Amino acid sequence: MKPVTLKQIAEELNISVTTVSKALKDYPDVSAKTKVELKNLPRLLTISLMLLQLIYGPRNLKR
Image (cartoon, rainbow, N blue to C red; front, side, top):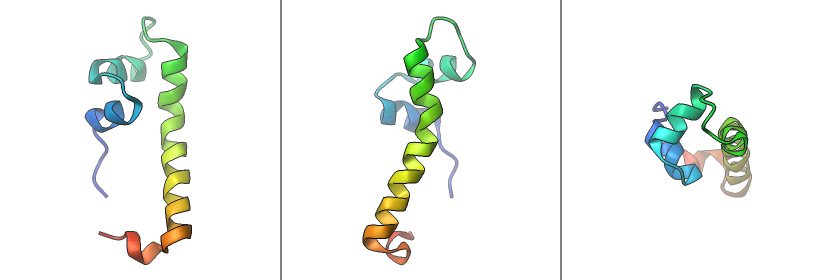
């Protein structure tokens, strides 16, 4: 599995790469809502992957 980039995270949340970087460093000028969304993203992506595996089966999702 390839590492996730800041750009991919930013695209998923519809925010800038700079905002992702600042949120990860806990800058005070990033909203609490954005920080929460960023922290919840791995859980949401895991749930999405699990749902896809249930629908299509794990073998069909391999690259």
